[in-house]
Image 1: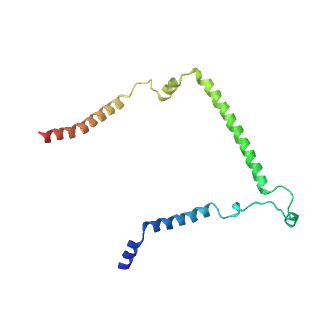
Image 2: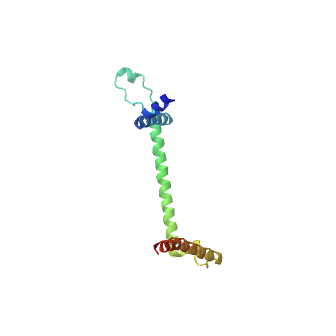
Image 3: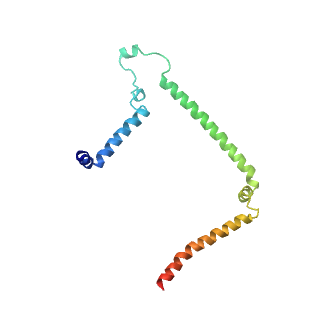
Length: 143
């Protein structure tokens, strides 16, 4: 038992943090496949022997680039259309004041419920009691 306690005392926090960070790095690296095929260099063949085996056609990278471009164009068009829709809705709502719209949605024109008023008054009284009790105690002590 003494060996275990002396060993625990000899471990430094820097060692623990280092081991934790190394383990975390390996877990994150395996989760995102950092060491996989995705990070291999894509170089153009220079020698005649290498170009001899080159397959004609579109590479996988070119297909991905085209797909990304198409998705970017579609997203830009959707954003532009949505922006126009928002502008049109804002133009339609300009006849109404923003504050009137909020007042209508929150029902601020309706009177406050008597039960709500009573609960609010009780909370105020309780808060006053909480504040006055220490003040009264201080006054009693100082006398």
